[in-house]
Length: 215
Image (cartoon, rainbow, N blue to C red; front, side, top):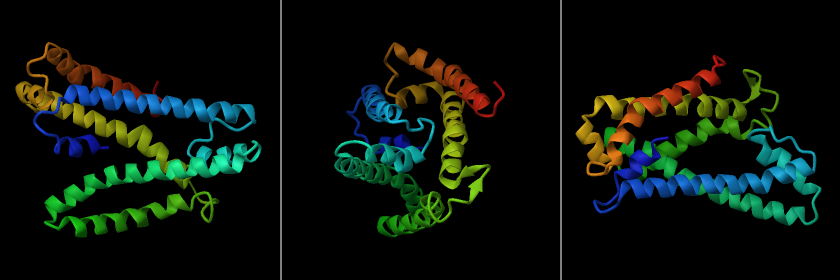
């Protein structure tokens, strides 16, 4: 989602990019696994639908909590933590369009932040209402939030990842790409470049093919 591109531009010269990238990848994966281990056993145990998608957090999981002793307090803590996760993610995601608007439209950061926030708020209203007022409205047979989540996760993000991999692997000079990745003097640099040029694009094409039902 270009967050790493934007945040990467703020890194100091002494920051080791491979180590930072590994820390982010391991931390994010570990957190996702812990969240899954916390939520899915409860959903299975109490007869919830594990395939509920985004509505799992807002409909299926609250129904599970309603059947648990102390579920009300657990739900309060869960949604407070969920709100904190959303806010911290929102700050990082907001930085990307704000940086673009600031650079291209020559706006001050406060004005750019207000303009982008207003636009995102308006665009997000249908998703926020998809399980309420707009519950009967669907896109390709899915609620609005589910449809947007499906499109972004299965198509937009893989296509963006493919474009980035092709740009770094084939458009940039190898020496520039390796220097930017902090791998110019590492033995793993050649392997990384081969993966960016061939391995990553091939993997993403397979993911897209599966999303399109071609595999």
